[in-house]
Amino acid sequence: MTIHQSLPPLTDAGSLPSDAMVQLITPTGARRQNPVFDPWVASLTPAELRGLYEDMVVVRRTDAEATALQRQGELGLWPPVLGQEAAQIGSGRALRHDDFVFSSYREHGVAYCRGVKPAQVTPVWRGVAASGWNPYDVNMAAPQVIIGAQTLHAVGYAMGVQNDGDDAVAIAYFGDGATSEGDVNEAMVFAASFEAPVIFFCQNNQWAISEPVGLQAQRSIADRAPGFGIPSLRVDGNDVLAVMAATRVALDRARTGGGPTFIEAVTYRMGPHTTADDPTRYRPQGELEEWRAKDPIARFAAFLTEVGILDDAAVAAVAEKAEAVAMELRAACIALRDPAALTVFDNVYAEPNSTIDRERDQYTRYLAMFDDGESDGAGSAAASGTAPAAASVTEGMDR
Image (cartoon, rainbow, N blue to C red):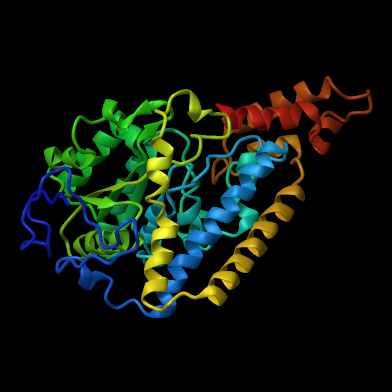
């Protein structure tokens, strides 16, 4: 655990070495007592604890299904979350409904916690929509592909909440590589300067595509935040209880006027960066097996079994639920249809915009070149969403 500066209500915790971290459940499933963080999860009921286990299992199963869909040609790309379930579920379930999430492209577990439906997850990755859900329905912004840009959005939203006199909190999710982006550092400057109620949640999964975390930080990433005047916590990201406790601490601090907090959740990306990546080309031999022994689901299941909360019947019921959700995701994905070409211009601005009108007109005339001579100027290709239109949507996603 690293606690830099006074981090209410952790003033008695002191400061520990940067290579230490908050851990409440060991990789073997043993419960570690921690007088500072235990109170933040002490109220969890057996049903809620089983719920955390179910969440992680469901997210892992749907992630595997989405990966399979990409391999079968039903999705253009998919960024797997395998291994990071505890970091996402522990933090996601700590949030209130009126808190607002600003994520990167890998937070499928957080989206599940916010109520995003399986049918809403895949349209972006199939290239048929710019977003799968209305952000205000679930208080979670559309996934951000531009690395680190969501941190600026989160701070801006948090400053707005602050000006409104509300006690909701914004949380930004990003990876270890994003901490080297200017946007993240600029966001922390603003957050510290204005004491914005925002949480910077870094999932340190050890690899920024093919670059190891050692190229992002020589010690812990959590060490960076104090330079901006932001207290930081380092937590075992494969321990769902520790993540929840740390997130609740940061939420309480933000709600009570304490300003921003930086959380580094130390976890591991067991799969590829995306389905276009081959991690065997750059990972050291044996590293994956070392982290498999720290699997977030296995350790939590061992803990729940030991305390009598999880049995074979419960495990089977959870597996059945996960399979049902995965099949719902598959059916929804396969049922997706390419949109009409000109819908790419819809909802870009809330009000009419002359630039969009001009671009729509130019694209309409371009598509008309592929018609059979019966076009009325709009072009049948534009109406049907044929090859040129579908390609344009997908290429836009790639950029």
